[in-house]
Image (cartoon, rainbow over all chains, first blue to last red; front, side):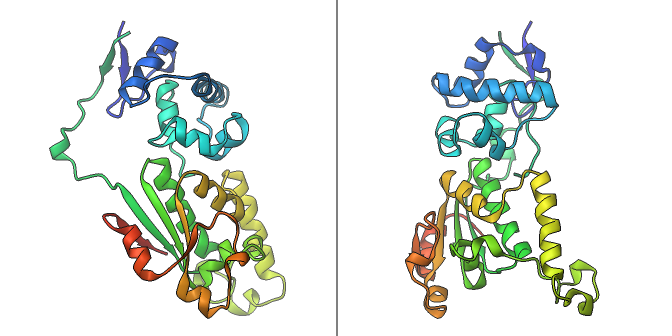
Length: 97
Length: 169
């Protein structure tokens, strides 16, 4: 079964996500390889979304994921919060912060 | 697993060109004067947009080490507060309004000014102080927080802003 994404490339159903798909979405978005540091962020994002119903802000991400903000921007160059959400298979975060 | 697009992505030529860089000017020193610019700059970086923040006039308070943590909400001369001027002028009013706003912001996960400037700097945005204002207020580089990348002239600011949008707050 193919995974369905919206016009911006976010999965419409987080349950369709798996690690192979994450690699695929990452490649499509200019991340050549998902390193253990990427996975640390992705797992934190997914876990937060699945338990609280919303994606963490970049501030929380920087404080609680164990990956500081500077590194987040290196790992996910075109906007960490959104790109990480996309790769993690959760909806686009809609916060302003 | 294959990826299937639910809605067709609009062809590139049908969309207006995306904003690729912004230069945000922060010229006011009240809390409500500083936050919008910080939010715009941080929001730009979150979208992968290059950003520079230029602090000028009283906006400099947001990057002056001894003042950064003491910015206040203006309760006088601020019709948006919906508070009679004489009430707003009572001792402690500005402090109270500032504390209330800080509480609400913390709830929304909006950081205090110092942490926000640090976040913006860590996101790769440039943080600049305006030379004319620095000279006027008799300030020196040592007065600023470490995130400040330099004191620059208006001309240098425009160079940095080249090819992008300028947001004045």
